[in-house]
Image 1: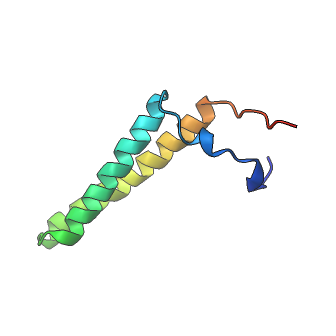
Image 2: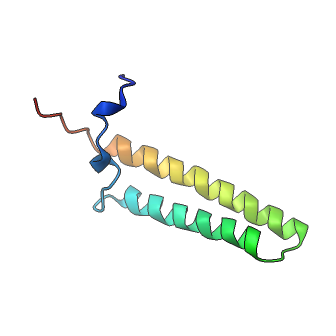
Amino acid sequence: MRSDLSSFKLSRLIQPRSRYFWLLVAFNLMTGLLAWVSQALPLPWGLRLLVAILAIGNGVLGLWALRMMLRSSPPTPAPD
């Protein structure tokens, strides 16, 4: 596997026909919303911890969705 990022296509990340793309978008939006809630609202310590754990879990699930999306779509060959 090459570590050269010049061969990476941004179009592999934007795939509106893939269900994993929409899961990725949803998880990232929920993570942002939960992070905002934990910072903006005066929550008790225990509730703030619960929101932070949910935000981290959403971030991990977003990474999982990204991994599944990239695995399900074969990379397009670069034109010569």
